[in-house]
Image (cartoon, rainbow, N blue to C red; front, side, top):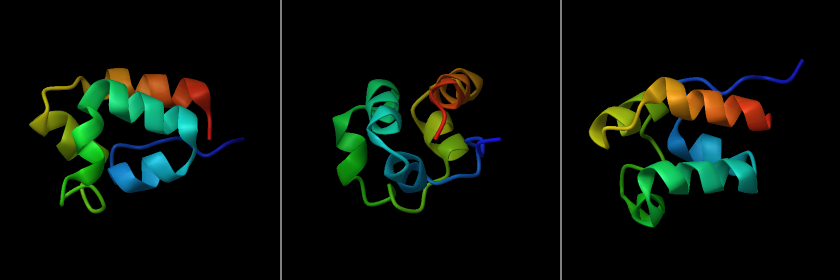
Length: 67
């Protein structure tokens, strides 16, 4: 079974899993996310909170794609 994306993963960890995940992060957080100083250490849940993104929605979308 493939490992699931979790709310504790950093945005950088999510994006490193592949181009599909990168597209999903860009869709929800915007292109500027990748150059933000917090990008490498910010957990997905915190990014979602800061950008008013529904965490369950993005996790569902990421986990549909698989790693």
